[in-house]
Length: 145
View 1 (cartoon, rainbow, N blue to C red):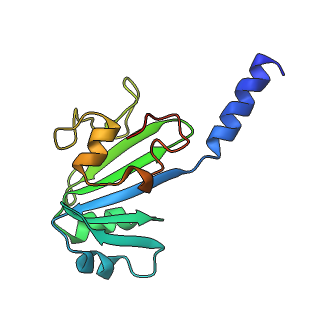
View 2 (cartoon, one colour):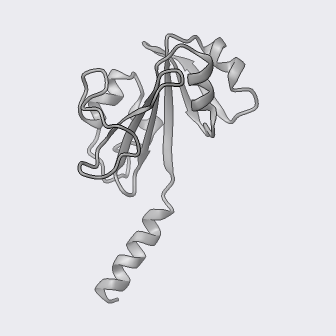
């Protein structure tokens, strides 16, 4: 296989690795979140900040931010590319993002830390998200949490 064909194959395979997400809604109870997440394939449980939601979130993150005081932390991880990002929503104000790809357009204004944490592993700890909820470190190119 040529180097170019190898690169195309790698990109093609990595593009098929799903990005997994979890969401923390600070200050919200699981009951408040369930009232908004009707009919979705999600798991909802309390955590030290409020409520943790995992599964197929679709557009719920925006709904949580609009309906609950928050902030809402939308955490995304792709095991194939090692991309890790946290988008923070507070009501209808401009979202902000922490992203582990320095120098690239993060899509939103960048922030330097999430609750004082500056690495994916410490961000997961600060947000009380189990690493396995995102597949972080498990069979990915990411370091273990």
